[in-house]
Image 1: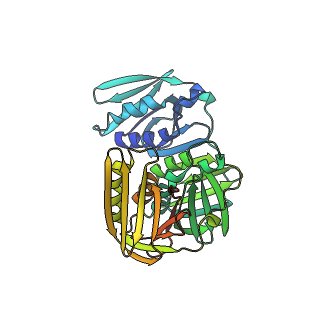
Image 2 (image 1 turned 90 degrees about the vertical axis):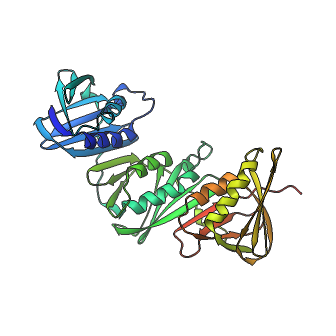
Image 3 (image 1 turned 120 degrees about the horizontal axis):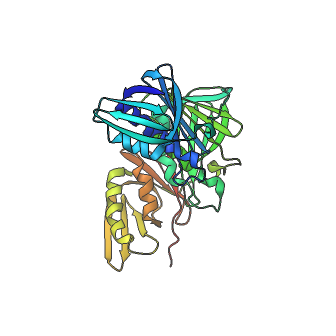
Length: 368
């Protein structure tokens, strides 16, 4: 195996597939990245047996062949060489030689015969969406994924296909988020799959912003993301996701419209005091066309006011400040609607127009 390629392209490819490497692999071969050279193409593959990532780059190929090298090392090493235009890699016995400028480094190869093959997935069931839309949807709700094992299904993100719309959903028992994106084409009108939140977050990092199309193919317990030069496969989580639509209140007694950035600024300052107490607690008092934000702790107290347009009843309600801040930080719109069903019922945050996203947060019960 011998080839010459663009250093930055190789570094980017190594960085992409490295997202599938396990931090503490139980099987030594899973520490490796497989490099396969054929024709004018170099294919790099990494896996932790749950997630497979394969990506291709073009190269000037002198000798075809394969090798497996320690992934973390070669990724970090090549990243330090991106100031060079070209790099040459050659397999010499049980080592791979890396030539860069006037310098050369040799890395020990791993046993390539035991390296697992990437799974094949039939394309009978598929959907196509824009990469940028899917990336935004996943990143905007992934913070809601459960982190503990109490309800394993909630450690996943639901992708809910319905006609020409895909909804990504996550919830952890205290908050819920969903975001929608347009489906360009699909083989079925409806389909639901659940993917581990950690895995889907890594996939979102690989997706590019913009209008390039990703094809998502499903088969039994496996899903494949085809990005063109990069292919990603992972296992699905088996089971039924919670019916998230039934969790959202149908009616509201208090409804406010406000400027998101001003609300965030007030919450951010009030949170400086709220973080000093056990439950990160702050109180909202809604009356007239003003939301008053209050937080108290041993360090002091803060009172902030934010103008709003109120419909319905006045209300006093309390929240974990971080839960509100997490939701608001994902919103790009300038104005939002916040809807309440009382001091102890879930509160939802939605765009002023349309239904592109929804965030739901449970309040904290106020004593007295």
